[in-house]
Length: 331
Image 1 (cartoon, rainbow, N blue to C red):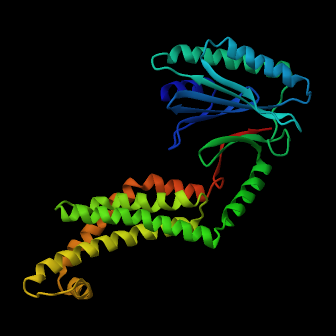
Image 2: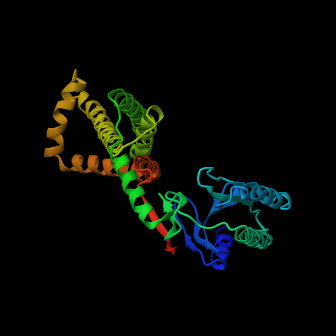
Image 3: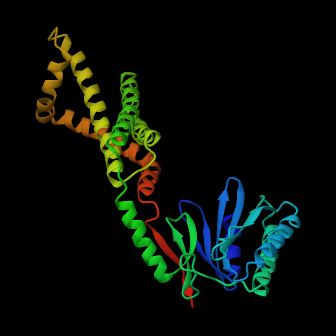
């Protein structure tokens, strides 16, 4: 659908953007701020136009028109609606189009025709563009929040709104009970990864690749017990991941040393071996290099494989903080 969306963006002079959340295009359809976003599963394209009508009697007329569009689409439109606000009659016209593989050309023609009809209807019924916050008509632009969804704001309101959201994100607090549950869940999830690390090591394989399991366990263990995040909670999860990797590697080293020294020193306890590990790492560079190498591999694979999860946790703690101007406002 990427080529399809790029063609539509070029046709309407929209700004095309590729991001981790999916491809999108933002700009104006006529005088109306609009965004388009594609999904790969199922293959659909969502279209949103922001408009306002001063006359409340036009809303049911718009609803009837949208229903007629859906009825005439022969299944090409999976949903259509008007999310209007009864207070100021501001809202977004939302349309979702199927895009079956191999039918991009016919879908593009249908979408172009539908958007043309919608634009004509809105203009004939005196719908105008307004800010979604203050209902003003000056400097109304399209902004992308967190790279996830578009909003229609005027520039002044967007700056004020973004500042308020940042302040709210900074004061997200977890209660002592939430911290306890989250840390316990993170430790428990990381512990399972440590167990697998040690099992793989005893089996004679490179156990450091299990760092990805420790990272996943640390993140998911916290998230399953506490739904909200802040910067401190993300840092705690990363700390637990790193500490668990170090513990797993040290534990495996102590087991190996105890086995190697047991013939010469019968009765050597686990704690006695552990007590001598720092001295061994300092005095025998080869052992230290091997341990550091294993830790590097474990943290590398853990960080690489869980990057998306860590990033998701970070963005959930900073939800609404990023708001990018996609297209300059029109006066």
